Length: 488
Image (cartoon, rainbow, N blue to C red; front, side, top):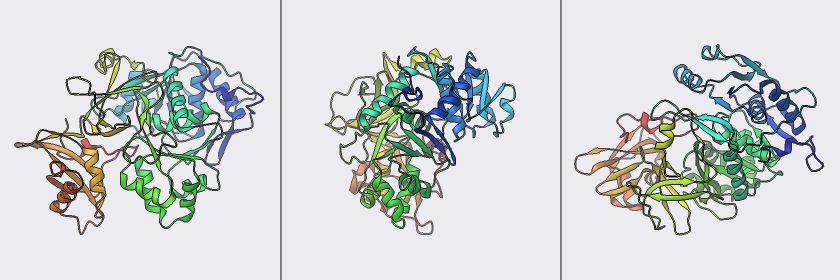
């Protein structure tokens, strides 16, 4: 297998003084990254597995690259993980070392692990080793644990390379691109796509540390950034700020590619950004276990609400509850997404039972429900466990109702779930954060709004008002934290 990071090896077409990483004031060229990561790789070689205290810093990027160069599987740790979950992850993955920045204060749960402080200065020229086995484990990323203790997802070098190369094909991603983002580095989106992606292409990444619209405007504008990665919460804040911020508007208009992921971007925010900047936001779809499956391709035109078509070498099908494949692409028939391809994970660490249960033959069961349009593009309607509502004999996706409700001028945020109903089986429930808490929209007003845009059977039968929606670190709404929601 070819190296994951060919740009780390100097050559006539790959000068080592090219910028690779910038986190705030700290910047590393490819030569400096090769030196720092190569030196660290030599120190951790043979460690078995290493944990990485994944702060949004250059040290985290150096640590992960070093582990990949050394052929040592890395376990990124969320610094905000609670004591019990951290103990589970450490006990489950059994790392031999923990890599952290010299200034990082580690919790007591990591006290039993030998610590190696990550230096970004490097030690001059260092050998950059190469692992050739494509099935060698590269990263072990833990799931969010919504249905039990978090599981360690083993991602091979093959899966990472295949997914990043397929995205490069869909997005025309090259060494000339400068990626801007503020995503956490313990997750697929921020770490694999947001750091390893630019490094594999030979381009550069500028991490904001923490998200701000000012930082986005600065790095995409005068900073020369060409691509922006974000989650819907970030794009919502950008959309809110555009009207009064001409510098932000110009910066987004000048960007080559705006990408949203980790959750569905509401159509209303798509439309506001496109109207102000002339740029459409591209959505893609993936999971920890599958990396990236689909994307709207560059140049394919605006597709609000769509996550695009399957990426190169990824096969995708929709199936009924009994596993029967849905043969039609009519934009209406809802089924579970199953995928197969070189992007899939190798298995759950130490859980052959869970790995076997996750597959239907060689097809991975995503648990996501979707419809497929006539052109092959995919529109996700939600998770089977929390977003598929079976009401009055209909299969209803929460996502399309949420988009309809967000079109109402009195609704700021919304989540839709189902709950038991003696007549319908399940009834549609809307959890609404109103624009004006003193004057929330009435239940009847919102029900009529949805019925007029979609269909009467999709209208919310119950509306509950909240001051905010519960969200995780990636900005996803945690529907299981909504009191009384149906947890299928």
